[in-house]
Image (cartoon, rainbow, N blue to C red):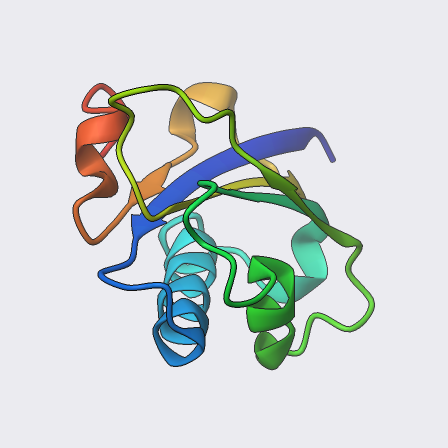
Length: 120
């Protein structure tokens, strides 16, 4: 089965652990759902967040989805002046029998402006 990458992003209203958990769980769940995937298809997930989000690791928020055996890692986005703030981005590597053009990338909560060419 081919390995594909699924992109996603979400935007928080505040640097808050409860909101981070809700937003990350919503995003990862939607990424899986739109692509017809179960958590068993996940190979690994890279999370990044903008420098203004320091309340918790986005990967820790995703663990609530039962991803204990999926390698997760976090990194910080580059602090580009004028960039959209309070954003968590996701790059998930998955085993899926879809062509690259069939992958549905997911942008939620105002993050759609980041990639209007990909956002559904």
